[in-house]
Image 1 (tube, helix red, strand yellow):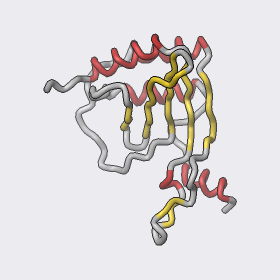
Image 2: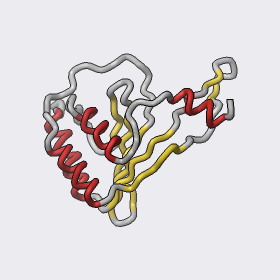
Image 3: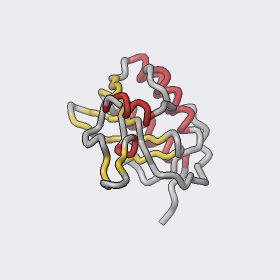
Image 4: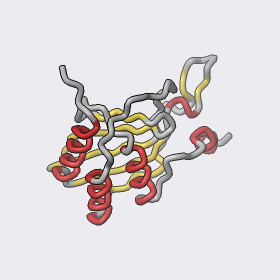
Length: 152
């Protein structure tokens, strides 16, 4: 089985953006933001959405341009940290969600259900630029936000 590279990943993502009639970016909590190790459970049982934004036509064009311009050099190393996604991008066509991408900027990892290709290194800076474009941040104190949500 051939390993699909960053170029395939970039092209698949660019194609999905073109096929989507709605793209929604969400910034949210993750279960480890407030975790009770003794009880073995999250103190935030349901995801807290800090912000959700449907891309405008100009933001879609911005996203498309970012992806089309990504350097396709394939990611060849991965962090050993725990995948803790705080951002997601949902792609819709004809009112149905057709794909979802979960992003962990801390680890430089994504989980995207539309491909088996390995992402290009440049994906993370491109996605960070998209987050900035919609008013979100790729880096925040997620634990402090969870404590604020819990009233601590």
